[in-house]
Amino acid sequence: MTDVVLSTENLEKSYPGTPPVWALRGVDLVIQAGEAVAIVGPSGSGKSTLLHMMGTLDRPSAGSISIAGQPVQNLTDSELSAVRANHIGFVFQQFHLLPGYSARDNVADGVLYRGIELEARRAMADRALELVHLQDRAGHVAEKLSGGERQRVAVARAIVGRPDIILADEPTGNLDSKSSAAVVKLLRDLNEGGMTLVVITHDLEVAGEFPRMVELRDGAIINDRRAA
Amino acid sequence: MTDRSVLRPSDAVRVSLVGLKTRTTRAILSALGITIGIASMVAVLGLSESSKSDLIASLDRLGTNLLVVEAGGGIGFGSGTLTETAEVMVSRIGPVEAVAAVGAVDANVFRTDLVPSTRSGGLSVKVASPTLLDTLGGSMAEGRFLDDSANSLPVLVVGSVAADRLGIANFDGSAMLWVEDRWFGVIGVMDSLELAADLDRSVLMTEAAATTSFGYEGISESLYIRSQPEFIDSVIEVLPATADPENPDQVQVARPTDALEARAAAEGAFTALFLGLGLVALVVGGVGVANVMVISVLERRGEIGLRRALGATRRHVAVQFLGEALILATIGGVAGVALGAGVTAAYSATRGWTTLVPAIAIWGGLGASLLIGAIAGLYPARRAARLAPTEALRSV
Image 1 (cartoon, rainbow over the protein chains, first blue to last red):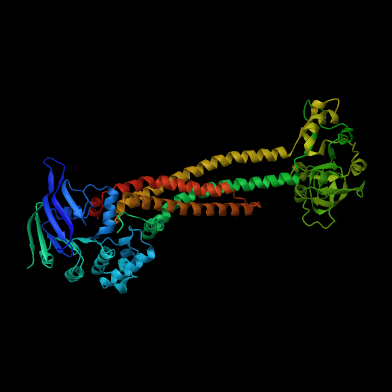
Image 2 (cartoon, rainbow over the protein chains, first blue to last red; image 1 turned 180 degrees about the vertical axis):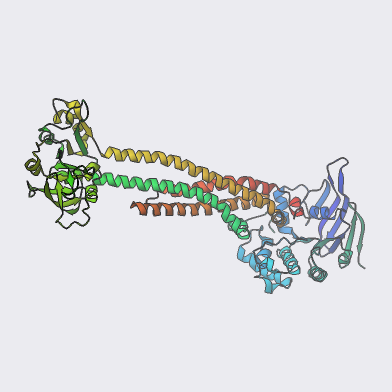
């Protein structure tokens, strides 16, 4: 019996209007520790909204979410910040690295809001950079790195605090196919090392690399299958 | 596993420096407005203080206890001379420490006997008591002042302006001047007399020499008086009646240092005006910082979104941008204080003043820049903090 890291129950999100726009309608999703889940769907299918909900960056209109066993839909804004700081790691399509700062310092920012001392953060960052095979780039500033390297730095930043779950939003969206394959392999390796992972992508080929694929259309799950 | 989002104070400072590190030129330019405002205020206060200290030093050196007694001259106001007994009478007033008389000699002074007698050069010939130089607190540029050894000898002491106009550039003790119809030897040149500038344009001789050569009758036109400072008001009160008991209302008593004090007061009024202008510059600088910060918040939505995703609370984001505004303002303020003090020092050096930047200008300048920074940073910081994380992440 594995632990449930994240679960949603009847998750709904609508935006006001006439008629209201439904981004999510009744999503039930359970993610177990150690899983690697790809969420696929065409643009407008609600997958980014779902990721924002799971990442506590946005609040659902109805339904509930639990992260690490804790229901989060009624937490205050700063309590949600604490959940993100301590339990969730994000990887974004645009990398979001700070220019002018070294790869090490960018990765160290992954645990900035946990109140850990700078030197300890940097030591953690060096270990995370080893996991993404960029230890020799630790001192390079962000803009000196290639696209693939930048995304690997962003992945290192997401895993530096060993969060309960990594949420990746189109992590290969800005990469060429070679870098893309490298990042996907990295994510799979990390998952094999025990990291729980949710990857959002519109690329079925990328999605196919992960053992579980959840297909989303018009805000609802239409398919949820695990590789045999 | 803690369940709080924490930003250590040292990290708050670090994240506040991100904007400065990634957009250095813009940061410097936006701080420049505050620098100019603070610099002008510090310079105004510094210059006013330095010049005032110079005035006060002058007053200390010259003493504020000098009084000048003159006969009311002009049409309907008598002869323009004091009575013969005035000098002696005044010297008998208790608190009077020294009296020096100056009288006019009806003669003109020339460089040589070849200069036409109409070209008097605006210089006057006067009789002076040997005590005059000390009473005025003056000093000699060259040679010596009139003393008892001069007695009735045909010798002159020349005022600073008169020395210029008469061409006594290199004083070697052999210069001669032509007074009316005879030669006089020059025994000394005075430095400029700050409290009796009219004597700078005069040549002085002893009473005995004037009597011998020009039939001077010993009637002085002004008396310079040093009084004990604590009794100066009483002395002023009794002076007219003592100098001329018959017509006390025609005796004018002046205190030359009043003019210096009036100058100090007038400069104070200008200081307030320029301080106001400096304040305007400072406010404009603050608006500049606010403007740059608002743009910065718009440009850095992605970073704000990332920080929220990393666990920053709204307060942490607000602290970051407010901190950045404060750091910008502090840099501007420190540079402004340094620049203002530099301007004060440079200008004071050209004027020979002691450089004096009051502590209130330094601390007030830094305080004002911090205040301006806080006000300028408040709105952008609130905007940044209110940005929804999803919105911030979407818009890159």
